Structures are given as C-alpha cells and as structure tokens.
Amino acid sequence: GIEGVEDAPEDLRPRPPVVTIMGHVDHGKTSLLDALRTTDVAGGEAGGITQHIGAYQVTLPSGSKITFLDTPGHEAFTAMRARGASITDVVVLVVAADDGVMPQTVEAIKHAKAANVPMIVAINKIDKPGAKPDRVRQELLSHEIVVESMGGDVQDIEVSALKRTGLDKLEEAILLQAEILELKANPDRAAEGAVIESRLDRGRGSVASVLVQKGTLHKGDIVVAGTEWGRVRALLDDRGRQVTDAGPSMPVEVLGLSGVPSAGAPFVVVENENRAREISEFRQRKLKEHQVAGQVAARGTLDQMLARIQAGDQKEVSVLIKADVQGSAEAIQTTVLKLANEEVGVRVLNASVGQITESDVQLGKASDAVIIAFNVRATAQARQLAQREGVDIRYYSIIYQVADDVEQLVRGKQAPKHREKFLGYAEIRRVFEISKVGKVAGCYVTEGVVKRGCGVRLLRDGVVVHEGDLSQLKRFKDDVKEVSKGYECGLSFAGYNDLREGDVVECFESELVPA
Ligand code: GDP
Image 1: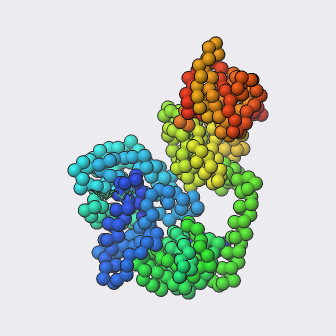
Image 2: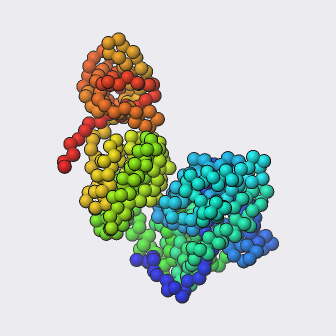
Image 3: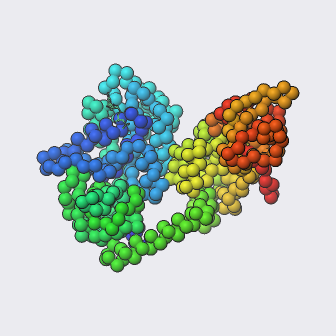
C-alpha cells in the first residue's frame, strides 16, 4: 500500500491538536468558533483576510497552536467518520448555561464516546443573568460525564463567546488534553491527511481544503485525493495567504487537482504522476464496482461485521439499542454485554428509548454497528438512509431472540436471520364504531400489501403498542384476500380496540426459522 508507512519513534514531533465543536443548536458553537478565531496572535499584523476553508489554526501567545474544524455540529463529525476519516483529537462540547443539557447535547456525547474522542465541556453564555453552570454539571452526570469540579476527569470551562471571556482557559484546557494524548507526527515525510471540504471555483478550478495529518505538504507535490489527483499549483492558508508548505495539523487549500474530491476522502503525496494516475484510476474502478454491487445488494454492517469476525480481524460486536421503554433498553444492554467471550467483545454504543432516527443510523454507520430495534421502528427518512448507507436494523419483540442473534455474531457463526416477512404498512385515516363488530380502522396502504390473516403490529409514533392478528380485511363491504399500496381498506384486529387515527399498521408473515 501507499499509505500507513510506520514512522520510527525518534522521527515523531509534537503536533497541534485538532478540535471539533459540538453541541445543541443555539448553544453558541458558531459564536465560539468566531471568538476563538480572534485569539490568533499570528494573524493580525501579518495581514491576510479571514477565509472560510473548513478549518483554521490559532497561534497562542505561548507559541502553541490549535486547529479548529469550523463546521460545527455532530453531522459533520459523524459524516467524516463514516467516510473513514478520523481527524478530530478533541471534542469541545458546548452547553449553554441558561438552557442546560438538551437532545443534541446528548447526541454529541454519544458520538464523541463512540469515536473514543476525549471531551472538554465549555459552559457557554455564562454572562447571562439566567446562567446556571452548576445545573449543567449536574445534568451531565446523568450522561456519565463527571466534570473535574465534581471530582471527575472531564475538564469544564465557563466561557462567554459573546463577551469573549474564558477563551484562554478553554485553550489551555485543550492544550492540556493534547499533552495527555501525546499527539505526535513525523513532519519529514511525504504528506498524508484528509479532505475537509472541496468545491469547483470559477477562476481557480478545483479547490480542496485538506488537513495535513502526517508529513509536510509542499507546493509542487503530486497528490492523490480520493479519486482525484494533480500537482499542487498553490497552497493557501486560512487567511488566503500563499504558503510553500504545510506541516502536521495544518489546514490548507490545495489548488491543482483534476476534480473535486469528496469530504472525508484521504489524500496522500506520491512519487510521480504515473503512480498518481494509476491510483486514481484504480480507485475510480473500485468505486464503480462498488456502485454496481450496491445496486444488486447493499452489503450491510451485519455482513461486514460477521466477515471480519470470521477472519479474526474484528474483536467486537457493536450494537446500538433502541427500545420502547427504558426497562427493555437496559435489560437488552445487560443481556448482550454478558455474551462477550475471550475472543470477541460486545460493545453497546447507546441504549435508549424512542424510534430510530437518522442520527442513530449515522452513528451506526460511523461505528459499523448493527441497530437493534426493540418494539420500535425507524422513521421513513431513517429507513432510507439505512438502506443507502448499508446499516442493518433488526427488529425484535422478544429479548431472548436478541440474545440468540448477538451470540451467533460473537461466535462468528451466522448473521441473524429474518424471522418474518415484512408485507406492508397501512395508515389509519379514520376509526369507525360498528355494532357487534367493534372498532374498524379505515386505512390507506402506503407500502407493500396487507393480507388476510397476516400478523399485525400497531405503531404509534414509531413505537409498537399492540401485536396480534388481523381479524377482518375489507374493501368497501366485501371481504378480500389482499389490498395493495395506494388503496383503501377496512381493518379490524382480533381482541384489540384501542385504534387511533394516525396509527400505522405494520403487516407481516411469520417465517419458520430452522433450529
Ligand atoms: P449555534 O447554533 O450553536 O452555532 O449557536 P450560535 O453561535 O449561532 O448562537 C446562538 C445565539 O446565542 C446567538 O444569538 C448568539 O448571539 C447567542 N450567544 C452565543 N454565545 C453567547 C454568549 O456567550 N452569551 C450570550 N449572551 N449569547 C450568546
């Protein structure tokens, strides 16, 4: 391979940390990024105008440097990781002191934990009269974040992005964390790194922002980035100034590539143009094969995990658990964790309550995990994303079946089998009370078919509220065998009457699973 040449320990030098800022919307991620940018002492007089290139570097009065990725939010972070680029050393979790821990705060915590990236908590908006920093610390406890002032080891800094207070303390905290991580790279080798973002510029052609991770990138180098390649015509820093080279942790804009590489794609410097062309053509071919294969059958996280466990390349089964109630989520977590053996462990990324969202699917993708859905379903968008990204979601209503399947995976035996055949979805549009019959649901079939006598589950906000059999399937006044997508029908359920408008009926047929 061309990448991953090991460096001798004596060639390694300290490098600046690369930081991503995450947190709930409106808690001040953008404001904090803007404020931190002004702390750069190297920028000022040397000139240059602030450019958005996806990341910037600040030099502190001490001479230390920190690189910030300036696309806030966990979507960017997770998307990068999903594409294989792990470029963040430290996550700064912003929590507004007047608002406290909110849903996206919790998601950010989960993503950072799943990526094994250490966190620093910035308690922002401390200038506000309603600021309650201690309440934030307390709330973080219930998400297993124990900050230093409460005896834990997560640094917590009070800041105001607006008044620009606490920024130096936050930067000190980042540098301290970097020291603990012993971040090092060899600057004297061919550069490697990742594409942060890229675009086609009318005057300048392909413009790719890259983060150098190893080595030093020079003007004139021949670079392969994803499926694109080219000779570096110019390098520009985050103030739009031309530079001749960029060392480890430095973000730069690269001009001269043949096309626009995708964000998260790896880049590497190679010895000559022939080699660059060769690699880029090879990658384009692979990409096409992948796309063709993807149309036939998306290879999901489950198959990939099983193949790696069988090959001895993977030592962990990763799962993400979503359940209808907290008790079930916890019971499943405890059960599957016990299934680890000496060779293969079990990792639970997250066990929580509610329907499966796009964020869950992204986390599953980034961590190569299988999603275990217990009496809950995925939103339509989440299902589409899962299909596109090849993330497996397995639905269950019996805990021991979850245990069976995870055990099979741990032992490298087989991917869990589907125990039933999905038939279709119907939406309840109206509920009628009919004497002697009980309640009948006037439905519209939105997907697949509904068949007489099939198994049904009633979903309310993505959660299974009833599972049973269909007792009646009618089109107008007639009993019918099946009704397909796009048609209306009347349904009633054996021994169940709590039907509501807006509920979704999931129809399935059980399949016999060979022992
Ligand atoms: P983001 O959605 O997390 O990027 O949040 P923004 O940076 O856009 O900030 C959201 C709002 O909070 C804006 O109106 C900011 O002016 C305000 N804000 C951000 N930081 C502070 C702060 O430290 N103090 C106060 N009082 N307001 C702030």
